[in-house]
Amino acid sequence: MHFSVIIASRGKPEQARTVAGACLMLASGEHEVEIVFAIDDDDDNERAYRIDAGPIDAVIDSRPRPPGITECWNRCIPSAVERGADVILALPDDGLMSCPNWDAHIARYMAQIDTRLGVMAMHDSANPGQATILLAHKDWIKLAGFFDSRYAFWWADTAINETFSFVTGKGLPIIGGGGVTTRPGNFNPRMRDMASWWAFYGASRRERLQVAKMIRDELGLPEPDLKRIVAEWQHHDRMGLPASEEIVANLPNPKAPDDAYRSAKAHIDAYMRDPVSSADAYVASGVWRIL
Image 1 (cartoon, rainbow, N blue to C red):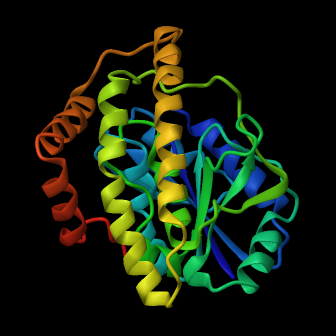
Image 2: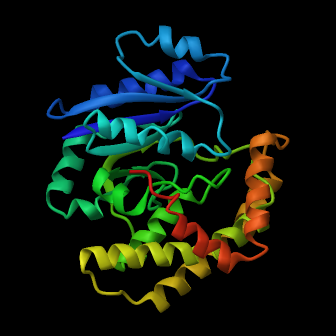
């Protein structure tokens, strides 16, 4: 099995190389593992990613900075699959692999399932029990896309978990063991306008329900108890808003909104003027498909 480990990074080439090195060091050697650094082309450190990679033979993907980090992972997937990748692992540059033989664990899991449902999370030390560090087989990505890149922060990983639950009636599997070590409380300093973003996330649930139906139809799966599952996610929304607003109120290093953030916020503001039509148009456009 061929793994593509895509590490999204900005301004931290040494840290990104450390993350890459841990992935390679703890891989089993039974599978091909490639490293991709997804960086911004305005990053003053771009030369360091290219020249100082040392023994790490990494692919460098350098493009204009998108509104949110998730597009850095998404945009690398088609070329990774062209190079033969079966599984995509999306890592931040502050997530250190600490699961010995992680690739072998994932390969064994994928061998036991229909890879069209091959999406899962790795244990995240800072968020135990939550699906935050995600990976997917190319067969799932062909059906469902991967990250929703409209978010400036948060939600995109939760959206995948939600879609999977609408398909299967269950939450994403989380691989145990050491998983990935991340620092707790390391929140995105761009966070703001949480009520608007939670409202958009709730309104776009209509999209995830439609995509999940497409997947169930494709795979011949029965419809799970969507009434119950949707109610559980709506409860998650209600609990998440005040918790996230408290985080924003206590951010130690808040950043002023930049052009990328303003673009993302303008999009959801337009979406929310007619959320039903916006959701239907988004699904019909197929823009969420990566492969």
